[in-house]
Structures are given as C-alpha cells and as structure tokens.
Length: 302
Image (cartoon, rainbow, N blue to C red; front, side, top):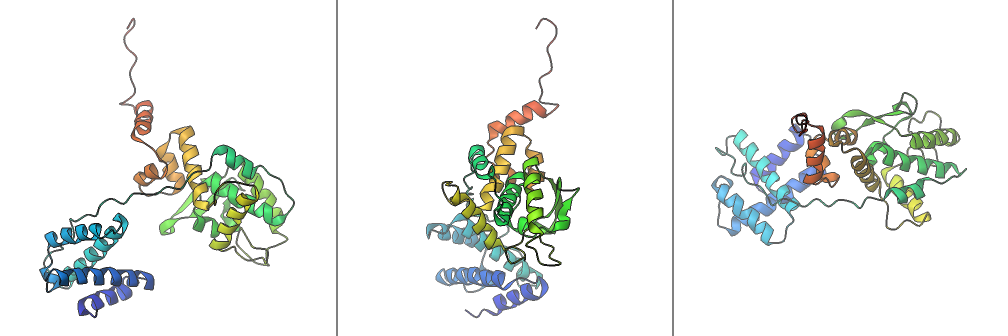
C-alpha cells in the first residue's frame, strides 16, 4: 500500500514526534490492515469512515481472533491518524475517538512464595559472581525494581549508605526506595567483591566478570540460573520477584497507596491489578483506615 496520507502521517510521526522505527512499522501495519478492511467494505476514502464503521471494524477484528490488546493497538493507531487528519484539515472530526476495544485480560506472573524466596536467598558463598547474583535478587525482591531499573543502577544511586536507593523509572521519573536489612547486607558483601571485578571508572553497580555493566539479558539469565541451581520450580524472572515484593508487602500492610509509590506506578489501578487486590480486600482497608468509614463507639451501655 502506498497511501499518500498514511505516508505523510508516518513522516510527521518520525520528524515531529521522533517516533522509533519500531513504532512507525507498527503504525504502518495497523493502518494498512484498516485500509484493507475499508476496501472490502466499499469505503472509498478515509473521510468516508465514520464511528459506525470504526465499531464494525473493531467487531470484525474480534471475530477474526485478534486479542483485545491487538484491537486496542489498532484503534489507537486509527485514533492518532484521524487526529492528524483533523490537524491538517482533511476531516472535520475523529470517528474513532469514542470507540473502545474489548478489555484485554492482564496476565500476571506467578509470585514465588516467602518460603521459596527464603530458600533462594539464605545461602552463603565466597564466589564474587554468586554474591553479585544474590544481591541483585535481594534488590528485586526488597525494593520491587523493574529489570531496566536495576540494570541502570550506578554506585552513586546508593543514597544514605545502602539504606535508600535512587531509581530512575518509566518516563525518566526518579524515586527513592528503601532497601531492606537483608538486601543491605547482600549489597555490602557484593561491593567488597565488586572492587576486584569492575574496570577503572566503571559506574555500574552490577558488573560482569569482564568488569562492565551487566546487560538486561545477562541479568535475566543469572536470576534464572540461580533459581535453577537451587532446584526452584519453573523459570524465575525478575518481574516475578517484583510481583512477589508487591504481593507480600500488600498482604502484610494492606497499604495500597504505599505499594503504588514503591512500585513507581502512576495509576493506582495498575497497582490494584498487579497485586491481585480484590474488592473485598480494598473494602477492608477502607473500613479500617478512612475517618468516615470507621465505626464510632456507641453510647454507654449499647
């Protein structure tokens, strides 16, 4: 397909929005698929497409077996395209603005239990690389870090000794997270061993045997290998450790807002889904904490 309007839109995304090649390719695929559906329906031009067509297109995608997430992405591409068409005066309104895809189910990772993590972490070793791997796993679990957050840590991100950690999360937002006692002890052991591995001037907190910063892939492999060596069932991934952090902290504290802050979630709804919080649990937290929800003591003798 060589649609001049789509080509111009993609060029605008590339130049004005600095969209990546991956993003541009995804937009092109979704818009080409939508254009093919328009042709099948006998819709001659983009300005003939209306909200009824948009809903019918979403329904057709669903019948064809596309997931809710894929349909959301398709509609998002169309919504952005029509916003641009409005901007350049090609259409008067955005026919996709009120159309929503079926909600995509969110698949959550299995959270290792407290006992399983204790078995993983309560081990001793003199091997510098084992000390490094244990310190990484402790930080994932102690502070709820994302993989990219841990991989980007530098030595100067240890704020206030090893008790606080400066983390750069999504959207380049910085937050301070506490580091638990066990994780601090693991970090102290690793920092001693790191001195014999890191190349001169290396800023990374976690380095490879060659002395440079560990890649995302290497961290994933080391976490999985450590779990496999100790006989833990399944393939352990850093995201599962973050999920265990959130789940175990919420189960013990019931403080959803605090967990949201620690995880670096912009939306508390994400935290609720992420940590398997059900409505009953939220209601219990509300009833025990909100000043308008707590029961007042009754009059004497009641």
